Amino acid sequence: MTPADVVFLFLGAVTLGSAVLVVTTRQLVHAALWLVVTFGALAASYLLLTAEFVAWVQVLIYVGAVVVLLLFGIMLTRAPIGRSEGLDSANRPVAIAVAAATAALLVTVVVAGFREAYVELGDPPAGTSGQMGASIFRTWVLPFEVLSLLLLAALIGAIVLSRREIQPPGESSDERPTERPTGPGRG
Amino acid sequence: MTPINLIVLSFVLFTIGAVGVLVRRNAIVMFMCVELMLNAANLAFVTFARMHGNLDGQIAAFFVMVVAAAEVVVGLAIIVSIFRTRRTASVDDANLLKY
Image (cartoon, rainbow over all chains, first blue to last red; front, side, top):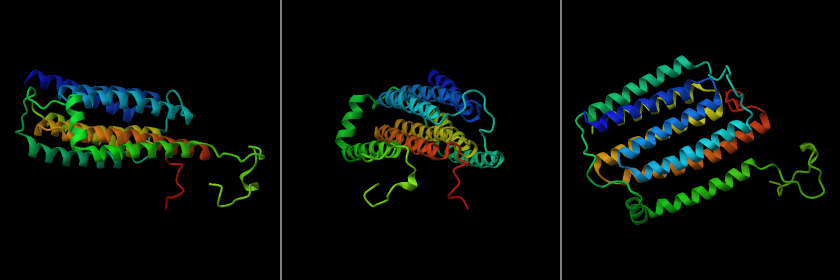
């Protein structure tokens, strides 16, 4: 067992432990904070796999943006802060049975397929941002541009979904919805 | 380095996320578990890219991250608007389409 394997085992233990805590903790905010630990350990795994660019994007997007968005969501939906019961639904035994079956199947297949696999970590190609940029803008330009359109659509969609109804001038904002005239032009 | 550890880790992480989606009741925690599953897929992508010695898997992981960010934004907007009309973030109460 090489030192890299030992580090990977440690990072895997951290990842799995914090992921289990995300799923089982009784406090919503703690779930979000354990998610930070999971994402951080995964980013360290990417660094060890020489996927440098993906690791830093993971830190920026997941730890920096997604977790903050989730915390904002917890705040905006006035979720209970502190211990709260009733976070789990009643189908826990079924869920655990299904999940155990899925995990057993996947792990059996992959162990049968890749038991003998071995990679040297030193040899190229590494995933530095220069190499990634060259590959994205040479080979993957079209998906990249489609992704930028997707991000624009998500931006507009989030604004449309989350804004309140804009009143035309002359109507007060506390009117009942049934009193308003409805027409095709009032989306 | 033996990549089998990482692939098994990725699949177990995926299973934990699936358990969370099935078990949890709060819509935002379900979102966190979906993120766990996406991250498990990303780990598998990066590991396979490393095994095959090219960068395409890492680029797929990068694209998955961007799509996941867009998905979180739209999903949270939907959850907040559901909360605004029904005053709850629990998926058990958003049952108008059930049965």
